[in-house]
Image (cartoon, rainbow, N blue to C red; front, side):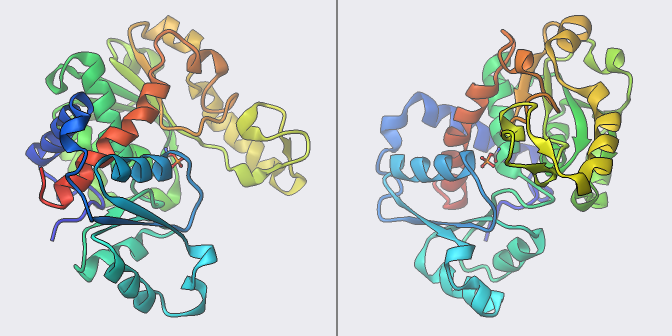
Length: 322
Ligand code: CP
């Protein structure tokens, strides 16, 4: 049974097939309006979400199926053995989308091979985001084979892991401008696979990375738990108050990552043709500036929408309809 977990087991051809199917569905949505009639997607969340939940739920509706949202905090997961509960959950659906705190739990669900399982963003991987982002790049570049160079700024994390691997498998050069990796996201096997392709470069030289870049991407390197609600939300701007106990770590992260903030000045100076990407939610003033989000090169909202189109292709692929 095929699952979508890490992308380590996906070939170039399989990745291309999913992206091409997403393009086809986006172009001709009416052709797919009933294709998953009577199929059920179970969406299990241990963490919050905006885009992933909306895109899977709307996507399943648009394919003629039904999606059920299950929040682990308001279901019985905390009262019983995880393995028993997840086995029971999978009896009610045809496909499981799981946003887990720990990838190990996604892996356990998949190991039962009851129904296809999708890692919908664990601490290590975010394969749906990677595929959606490549869809956005492909439509912007004029085809998958036209994407030549992608830059990732800031922290190496779950999103960069799967994006880097998918791009490298497709023969796209990826430049990581990452002074640090998020420790819990590190997968040495994935790193080795990506590096073995010869398409992954590491540098802290922004000029080298950004020269001739087609796309520049980033993601959060600040923890939102560092901020108190008082004084506003950090995700809404710079005004969130830092809790005293996190001040030291907050300042350390600013020092490490702020030089690699994705902002208009950086793009205009080093790579003016690079299209700006962010998987969202954006933490304005930290990994990205307001002027980058609103820049004429920004693809951020197209990128968010493409989560919808790629989820449809992913579900069809896993249900052997693609
Ligand atoms: N990028 C992403 O996965 O967004 P959500 O956390 O809102 O689902």
